[in-house]
Image 1 (tube, rainbow, N blue to C red):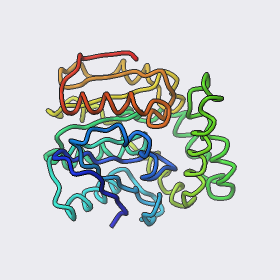
Image 2 (cartoon, rainbow, N blue to C red):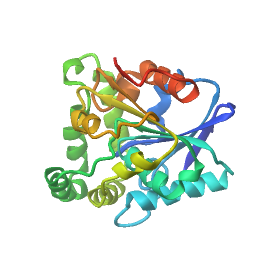
Image 3 (tube, rainbow, N blue to C red):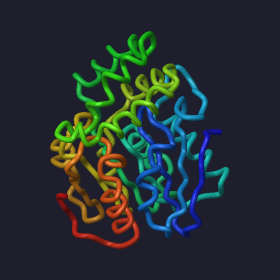
Image 4 (cartoon, one colour):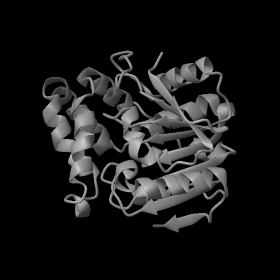
Length: 260
């Protein structure tokens, strides 16, 4: 069973899935601005935080199955599912297998598009350094995930993100990267899900190609997208704005597209 934490007593259950080299603690700042109508279920994905590694390759589908086991253990259905980055990939895999359990799906600085050949090659080339020099890998990569125009302002948050990354088991990180290489395109999920789908993206995101993501979004009334003036980590860079969008969009209604 994956490690998880529950907070709040709201009637609406919001399940939060963190990204690569993260854990449940990433939601701390944004959590204070989320509506008290939510009960939060924060899950450590396999090989991250306090959850055990569950194989040499942790595919998105396998992680989705493990998330489902937590939901079954807690007797939870009709949930709002939000995933950051890799957590978004897991959320899409979950939606493909357990759509009947979803009330809404939020891709939080993540994408439904498959990695292109260059990105897959980058991931494959990272295997050795993740295994043999993980601290160097984390220190080189984490700062690039934040808005380059606000590095000085975000210095403390970059340091927090790095501390969390360095606390990750390197073999858990390696198994997850191998799983991400196997990830397939999930556009059909967005084309066929008949629930509200929310997309939060960053104008300066170096991990997700925001322009390509928005260009390929299916033109459906149940899909809403927001572009924020930040990098890949809205939960640290724009926590109150992200929370406000989540509160309003998942509990109420907003115009179809908005640039902030």
